[in-house]
Length: 330
Image (cartoon, rainbow, N blue to C red; front, side, top):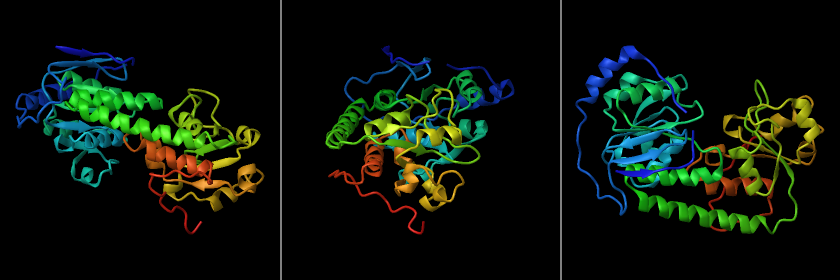
């Protein structure tokens, strides 16, 4: 048995009344043809997931459920998308992901639908995005569940390698990580030429509270990598910042991560109390497509490039696609 350990940490029990029914369904898991394994991939395989749980996968997975859009993107990027059978309601990239059966919403996993798909691997989301009770229920039924949750950029790369190993695509994962590191290096080299490091408020949302990155979080890391000084909540356990604290921080750039939901610079300028912020006065309120920025997956370098351009409009980043137009009417 091959064992892989990555530093990580959690889990919990669940709905007993479904156990008998779902266990019966698992007895009839279908078999399909097995693609050629990458060199070094072998089964049974034991890994330690992002919550510190050891998970054993007996054979190369052929029927995978992904419970986060980032996990779905990773599986497709590794060339294993044809083995995905289930997704969440938010999975939208690549476009063929929309054809998969949705089995999860904000309220949790539809266990009947999920088990009816006869999964032999579930890639769950951590930090309670996949309810711990649902994770525990699936594990009690004998379904291997690997929790993937990246609190920072290095873990995104480690998670791509983890998923690659679990699905039997280690070579593809190594190549993808190498390519992403090259892109990160190119952005870092460009950012290093910029003299300023402005105070940056990345707006996750503004209603009912003002949502911002926590210190040392994934988003705060990205702002630093993009050449900014992140304005954070000041508390690792908090995701909201009072307006009074934001006014004291006085961001020089406001990046609208909520632009996809209709929030534009004009909306920010019209908010009571915001009109004297340096970013608003200077017109440095910039909408971005938050999906590649906040989704910890294969397009993260593209998201970082968009963020760097938002903070430093003068930056030239050859080789990265142009940012989509946002707030054309705003």
